[in-house]
Length: 436
Ligand code: SF4
Image 1 (cartoon, helix red, strand yellow):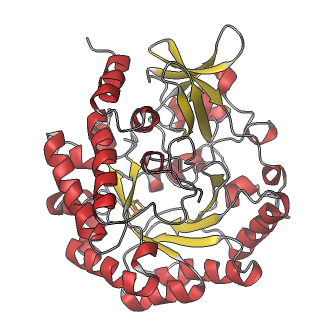
Image 2: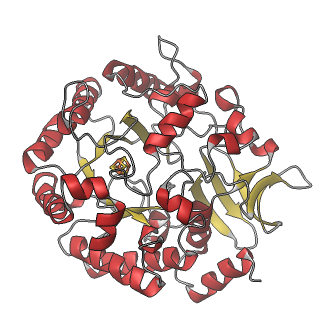
């Protein structure tokens, strides 16, 4: 039987122009990794920054199935270097999977290493606990709960609304566990604020701003579930927009303001911009028409794929095409029961979507699909998509970008192997090097 090491090395040699770091990172993101107890954190009381569960679970097991990792959280991210593949510095978001062939553990010399099939393949660095996580809000809430940071401290992730109004099997995106993640944290008795009050967000940002003295944090993302009716009496544009308005009033220009929201009508998109947001992520999720209809039933029913795409193009007139960065979930193209069964077909479809947007100056980006076990597609596809799909996507993404004269999108930090901090896919690790 072919080992995972064989698979990884075969793809590294078939695609030598894709950085080795990116091949490993994609495999870790699609399949997760296990932790020895010694590699777990002491939650908010230790020296290592714990996993904040900033929106989805991004785990391959439910909390009760994670064992010690449910009590002592794993780190938010790890950084890999060295080893037999001579890895340059690679930041990887942590997706826990106790049965993964990848394991973080200490070696005989007490050093933390990443093992694959029992063989050490990289040195592992852990994110230090940021000074701002050691402080709490006046009401006792932690900064990690209200305003966690990811991407090695670059991005403040503000999930203002922790659930989605696309609810249940007929509406939720078939790969999304936002609603389950909310339930499981509540059941575990963890603090998990459903709707974050604006003044709490401002207070947490005040703490970050005060203690982030080297200004590692450069951007904030406002996001959460879709709002099809209202939350706090506000529709989606005003609900998310008022956070940006308050942040920009208090800290003008301190961070790049981004919002991940639905593709809204142009007047609403203009309101986002007027509130001070500078980058808009109207995520199109999956390009193929049939798969969008089947895997994003709520979005299809309330908005519809063609209208969604039209609104993305319209929003480029408000934000400028460079600042419209719609996400797709890389891998669900190949998810059974309805996905493509060959990598060639899946890549061809994904490339068509990239070309559609990039030919208009809009640069999509992607997160690597994590098949969470409580989602319909996670249940039917526990192994996720083939690693070859993810590697070839990196290749076609860069080629399409270059064909249209585009460069790495703004708001993602530096690009290039050894420099990127974007942690939930390796597209930034694969692009030519830049400083910001
Ligand atoms: S719109 Fe879909 S992907 Fe986004 S939070 Fe709702 S269910 Fe999840």
